[in-house]
Image (cartoon, rainbow, N blue to C red; front, side):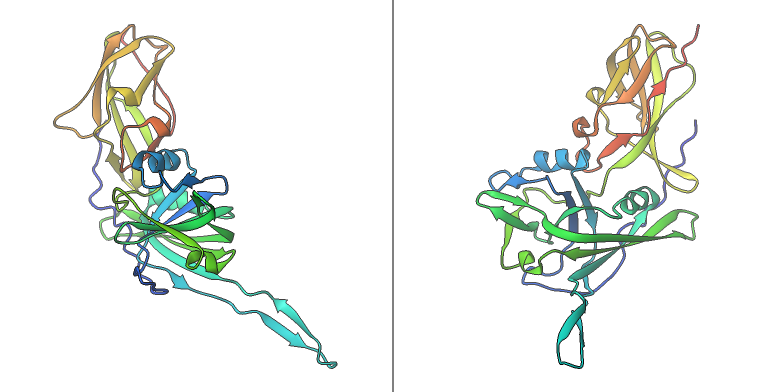
Length: 294
């Protein structure tokens, strides 16, 4: 199989303007499930954050800022001078992301998301909701809406222009009652959870299998996934893995050696939370049934 490398991801260049705090504009928002929480003492531990992302308890999105689209309460006054609300105020914010098609498809899944949001600033300060002493989680949201538009770049690569609107349950939680901590590592390279494909190259033997691992990030191009290690792969059905070596000339191509491989051997990646890659969380889109020479 021939893999065409992506020339450019064209990601995360959307521009929007809005609220500004003493920390400046947020560079990243992290959508979290209602149940996701961390203690203040371990909040800055990278391993805990990455595990949450890989298990889809947290979804980080790189942005250039927030747009404030608040709607005030509207009221109607009756003849007896009594008044009634016709629409409650909305504390709505918008973020726009120009993402590769892999991330774009994931962002669309946030429609109707119920949970919270964390804000990350350029100095790696993260802001969330301190709901009880010693614990922090995302600032609660009442609504999340997502709109997507596919765009084709001059080089033929496809990107998605995605706008995410969300309403904070209580805007004061973003500042006065918020909690801040400094992350121990930068989040600038983290975005979502990308599905990847395992494809066999040629015919395998009882002791060796060659595969390509890649993500389909745009029309007509595959993004190789390099730097995987033996612990990232698992064989079931028949055979056992001894070594996994990546090609020095073809990124994302691996030679897997072992014993007892057959047509009953099924290769796959381990669960996302166990993948060794730190800044590019991935998940297998499906297991590979091996074709072995008789």
